[in-house]
Every structure is written in structure tokens, then in C-alpha cells.
Image: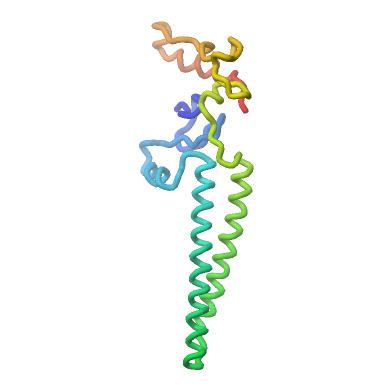
Length: 175
């Protein structure tokens, strides 16, 4: 399989590209729809999805903790009875869930920072068709321009084009 982002060949579907880190989705897998819904496009999108899930769970657990605490405090003032013992266990559980999700948010933020904060790699950058200033291939030296890849011909029909293109792409500098 070839990576749809950078073109690196000979890779396994359902794993990450060895060159750019893009998730190589196996379209025939049963989990394809689930990956698409949860943002299985790459490490950055998966970390962002985890960050959103952690944040929502953290806020919901804090809301439930506050709601239950307020409800049973009001009940104690009205009737003089305290909450049942199981409610104290729910308080502890919701507090642990909120703490765990907060730690998950901190870890996901560090991961997102390490992954570049969500900057998506442009395919032209990966192929070396832009320089550091962002100029297109026509402004680059001839060895790095778009024309540096060989065109296919009849001699390439037996599968040699894939191998030659992969070798050429492997020589390009990675950022």
C-alpha cells in the first residue's frame, strides 16, 4: 500500500506510515467507519479526538458531582437526613473520573505539542516541492522541482514504476 499523504510505498494498511506518520486506513476493515467517525486520520487527529473526549468527560463528571452534592445538601437542610451511603461512593467515583480525565487532558496536550500542535504536512512539502520559504517548485533548484520525478512509459507497465518512484521519493529530504 502507498501512503496517500507522502507516497511512501510497501506499507501495511491499518498502521502508521513509516515516513510521515499518517494513519493508513484499510478501507476493507470493519472498523473503517469507526476510525473515520473518531478521527483516525493520523496521530494528531487521534490525539485531538482523545482531548475532546477527555474534556467532555471531565466536565460532565464535575457537573454531576456538583449537582449531586447540591441536591443532597438541600435535602439535608429540608429534612435533616443525610444522603445514603452509596452516594458517598458515587462522589468518590466521580472525583476519580474527573481526576483521571484531567490527567488525560494534560497528557494529550503534551502529545499535541510534541506532534506540532496540529500543523498538517502539505504533500508538496513532503515531496520537496516547496522550500523553507514556502515557494512552489518553479522557484526551486532543478533537482528538487516537480519535474525531478520520472514519467511512466511502456517499459514501466510491469510494476517497475512503483519501485522507481518509491526509490526517488525515499531520497527526498524529510522534515
